[in-house]
Length: 315
Image (cartoon, rainbow, N blue to C red; front, side):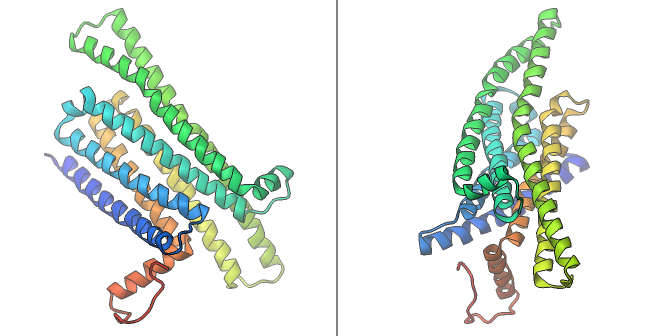
């Protein structure tokens, strides 16, 4: 194992550990809160489901990373590749749609516009989110089902390739496989477009409201102004993380078509693992209940709070 592979495994293991810890923390806090009150808000439900999916996704990505490094032939052939691809596609697509639904929910609840369509959606936010969640589940199943034709072509493609008989039939099958693989990435365009639109509208609305407050003589140190600025920073972080993840996804998906296939897959894998941990950590910072519990937990761990003192953990 060379230096590159060693760095790859260290980064993968570190990001996997951080991602598991962050998402398990979200599960524990929201799960404990639900167990006590038997109630959960729509945003908490989406965040909790998203955290669970990301735990599963991180396990799939880590397994994929180890197979790429230690058993590339097993990774690229047979039922193992198909199981990983199906599991990764469904979990990844559904988690992306849930993050998109969360962005839309924040946009409809926080943003302020007078357009009739926006107001209509804002007044029916719960119904809109239910339909979006159902649509996300159906689209995730559809994207996973679309892998069937790709698997069939890939089997034919690898079978012909193994005979080293490069014929016109081989070139045709290879072109068909490449085309289906490229078209498969189009499933990820709708959530990307919806996310970018909701984040852009939210940033525009918060920015406009902040400018209005400053023009009306409100101090830049005012708590409300500070809260708006923090919200803008959090949304911008979501925005850039999502773009980074989409880039990583493209690198990982098109790794087979790049000159250095193994290196492209490793880079894509490391970048892909960063998103589930980074996005969930920003969710904690942006959610008052999660942030408060996280801060109190850190203080208790560092000994700033006495063991008998009360705090808002799991409240």
